[in-house]
Image 1: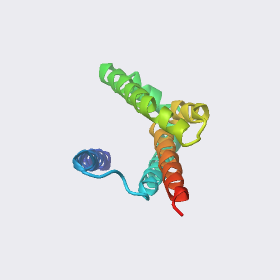
Image 2: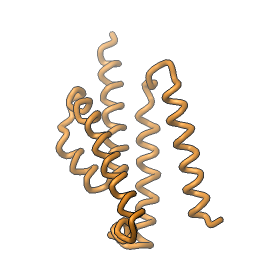
Image 3: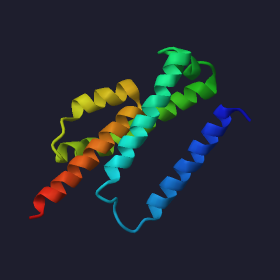
Image 4: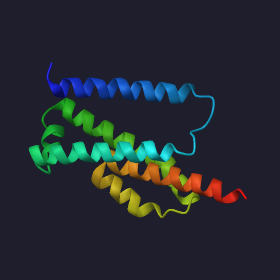
Length: 134
């Protein structure tokens, strides 16, 4: 097993554990949830920078056009980003964000932009909750 295999497997297991834990959680996210999203954004941006430096800025395109599975994964990522934005854009507006720059960031960076947008929404939501307390 290569280190890429191991990283992919660990990421899949961690994502499954997080999503299942969140789905079963009886209470909403806590006030510091934005920190986790921001940390994931930074970590993934770092890995993406590594991928760009070793595979080139458009290395992702080669992978997504290599065969039917590559195109299927590209479709999957586009659909996931679109679904996420359907829910995140109204939330962004509700906390006072202008969605267009964030949508452009997502279109240019994928999950990095989604995680950054999520972190900002969670941060502003928490800030609004704490500002309402006196």
